[in-house]
Length: 315
Image (cartoon, rainbow, N blue to C red):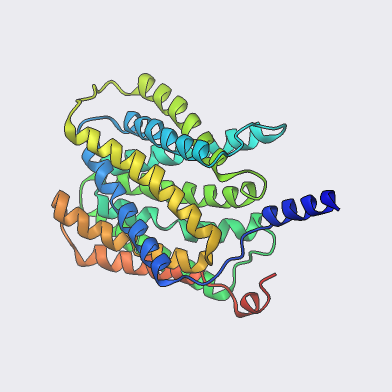
């Protein structure tokens, strides 16, 4: 009888958390995370004045990795790697490192407003890639419409950059590639999180990112770091606030509440980023930028909608 009770309790603890609709406090917390996340391109842009892109990325990984490790230790997460996990984590780490490298290099060449609009296209790429790699996640007509609408926003932004400096256009291209790689990482994460604890995924990204980006920086970047209070603040924001608090907070929300509702609130990030870039960095607010952002957000919202039959049959 005791053995049976023990097995029952273990089964109960292992049962997945039941997702539920967002409460008002949870929605406000999701909005807070969106606001904090929207400050990432601003903080990175500030840090790029004092450190080259790849080295700044590596510094972010170091700080973020320490925060995630502390969280894993506090929650007593089993971080031991088992057979077959090395390859999956290595692929994820490389994919994340390349994505962040494109993100920071692109941000170094273009504006924060352009960067965030092009990076937030990742749900579009998720929808396209999931159609081919995730069983059952097909491109429906509303999703396909969303893809074309978001592509229209990207084309509009690229057309706006054609009349300016060539470096801005190149930065836009790098930012768009980063958005695509972010979408690919989300699809890969969706497959890996079913059998790997999120802390392992985050730490693998941090370790691989630190090693690969610092090595690449030593090989290809000959710009010295200028140690300033602004750089320290930038790295703290990227590592502690975003790579630490925001990542962990998002995982907490996604584990308990409907992901579709959480993700809709996250779509406000480009709006906050554009305004913050105008206030802090003095970037211009153009009608083209706002229209591009609106098209991308609308397209991303459409591809995140679940069909009616899926909501009636959650299994």
